[in-house]
Image 1 (cartoon, rainbow, N blue to C red):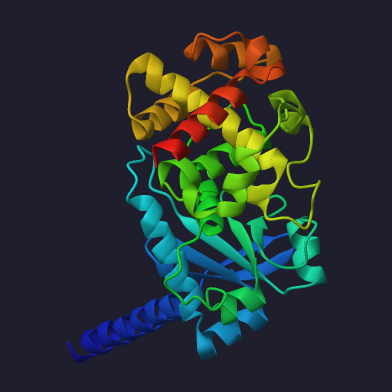
Image 2: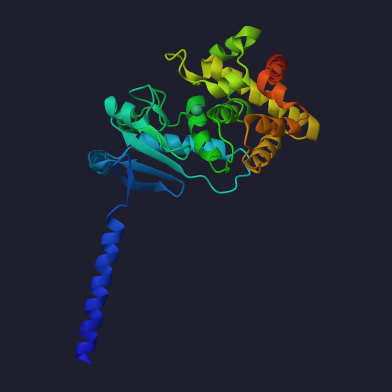
Length: 309
Ligand SMILES: [Zn+2]
């Protein structure tokens, strides 16, 4: 009897130690042959850190960055997205400078953005921003258009895609803060660019699909680039047409588009894809791709919203 008790006790102790080890040692993941520690900071947000940054994080945390991301995320969450699965925010922390540039594949040495090979399910952020965030002096509560754009990328990743092009990803991510969350009128520089936009400043969809969205005008804020504005106006025009045709408010129209697009089969040609996109709003694939019709509808909608205010 005593022997049995001792054996049970030993087994219990071993199990407790194993559970303890499991809980205290963080999970790990690999990206480009580098090992990252996984830290779950909330049920819908995780941070990936290399060993040095993980140690630093254990010592001093990154309270401002984390609270700001959760605040921006909460801001988006108040919109009524009908997502097929709950979103999970993932950030990979990279050392600013060459590591950031090399690992991310972006033409920048710091900041936040998509990471090479990570798809749209995660973002990279430089270590200076991560550890020393102050909201650019505006505080940890700051909700911004740029951050909402970046987080929108991750949230909209919940939709499956059989057809992919980066231009649409940017169009959606712009539509979320600017139109759906109604943040755009706070950006006077952008408002002036759109107000004085000439026909020649607007890119057709095909150009946007075949060229890099951020490779021109490198030094400018993404939201002020003509590539981003053109794609935004295209998307705004498209959603406007859905609102009109189906009698939907903007949020329902956005959800409608996302569901329709994600249910599309993989098309063999771009023309077939554009025809399917055009069918939803009674527009030809040719006009969707090779004209500025949707951009101009979006432009008109923007201007009438501006004068209504
Ligand atoms: Zn983007």
